[in-house]
Amino acid sequence: MNATELRAALSLASIYVMRMLGLFMVMPVLAILAVDYPDFSAWHVGVAIGGYGLTQAILQIPFGMLSDKIGRKPVILIGLIFFALGSFIAGYADSMTWVIIGRVLQGAGAIAGAVMALAADVTRETQRTKVMAIIGIAIGFSFYLALLLGPVLARDYGLSGLFFITGGFSIAGMFLVLFVVPNAQNIAPSADTLPRAEQVKRLLLHPQLKILNLSVCFLHLFITVLFVQLPGILVAQGIALDAQWEVYLPVLLVSILGLMVFMRIAQKRAKIVLIMSIATLMVCFNGLLAYSLSDDFALWRIYLMVIVFFIGFNYLEANIPALVSAIAPAGKKGTAMGIYASFQFFGAFLGGIISGLAIDSFSPTVLYTVCIAIGVFWLILIGNLRSHQRVKRVTLALDLQKWSVSELAEKLNAVTGVQDITIVENENAAYLKVDAKAFALDQAKAAIQ
Image (cartoon, helix red, strand yellow):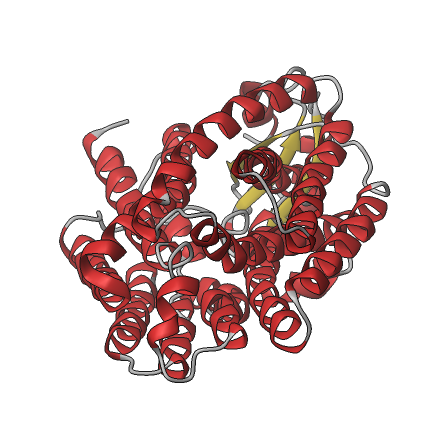
C-alpha cells in the first residue's frame, strides 16, 4: 500500500472503532447503572440497549445510496453529527426516556456503506482487499474492546460520562474525516460496495440470502438479550460492575481458541459447524434457564455458558457475512450486504424489545424459553441452506464504445473460471464471480480489449 492508502485504511478504521465503541460500551453496564433513573424498568433497559438498532436498520441502505449522490464525506459527517447529538442527549439525560432518545439518534448515524465506499474510492484495485481487511478487523476488535472498557470507564465516569466520551469520539471522527481521510482520487465502481434501490426487493426474496439475513437477525437478538441479563447475573454472583471486565477478558480469550477449533473443522464440514455454532447459543440459554430456576448456581457454570456462547457467536459473526458475499450475484454484493446489515441491527432492536417485554410482563424464565424456541426455529431454517463454494470477485473496467454489452458478456462468459457476470453500463464496469483456481485475470482483460 502507498502512503495515501495506508492513511485511508488507518483513519477510516479509527472512525469505525470510535463509533462502535460508542454504541457498545454501554451494553455491559446499562442494565446496572440505569437503576438510578426515576423511570427505570426492564422494558426501558431493553429498548435503550437495542434502540440504536432500529434507526441503523432503517437508514443503512438510504445512507449508502445518498453517498453516491452527494459524496462519501458529507454523508459520513452527517452520520457522525447524528451520533454526537445522540451521545450528548443521552449524557445529559435525567430519565430512561431521554437515554432511549439519545440511543435512537446514535443509531441514525448509519455510515457503514459510505465508509466502505470511500475506502474503495481512495485505493487501487490491487490494494483494496487489504484496506477492507484492516477496517473489518477494526470492527471486530472494537466490539470486544468495548466489553472490557465499558465497566472500567463506567467506574470512573458513570453512565453519563460514557455517553460524553462517546460524543467526544464522534467529534474526533469528524476531524479525521475533514483533515486526515484522503479525498477520493479514483471513484471506484460501487455496485459491489453500495446498495441499489432497484435490487432490494429481488434480493430480499432470494431464498438463500433470506436464510442468512434471518440468521444474523437472530444472532444479534441473542447477543442483546445476553447483555440485558448478564451484568445483573454477575452482580448477583458477587462480581461488582467495575470488576466484570475480569470476567469478559478470559471468556473472550478462551472463546477465540474455541473459534480456531471451529474454523479448523469448518474446512471440511462448514454446514455442520454452522449448526454447532447455533447449538452453542442454545446451550447458553438453556444454562440461563437453569440459573433462573435454581437457588444454587456455581459461578464456574456461568463462565462456561458465556464461553460457549461466544465461541458460537464469534464463528457466526465472521462467517455469515462471508456466505452472503459468496451467494450474492455479481454486481449486487453492495445491496446484499446493505440488507444484511439492516437485519443485523434490527435483530439488536428486537432483542431489546423482547427482553423488556418478557421480563416486565413475565419473568427471565419466559425470556430464556423464547430464545430457546427461536434457536430451534433457526436450526430448522439453517438446514435449508445449501453448501456454497467460496468465490473470488473481480471488477473490470470496460470500453462500451468499442463493444456492446451483449458482446462483452459473451466474451467474458467464454473465459475459464467465470461463474457469474453483471455489466453496469453507467459505471463502465463488469462485475464477475470467478473460481479463483481456474480464473486468469490477464485472460479476462485480453478478452475485452
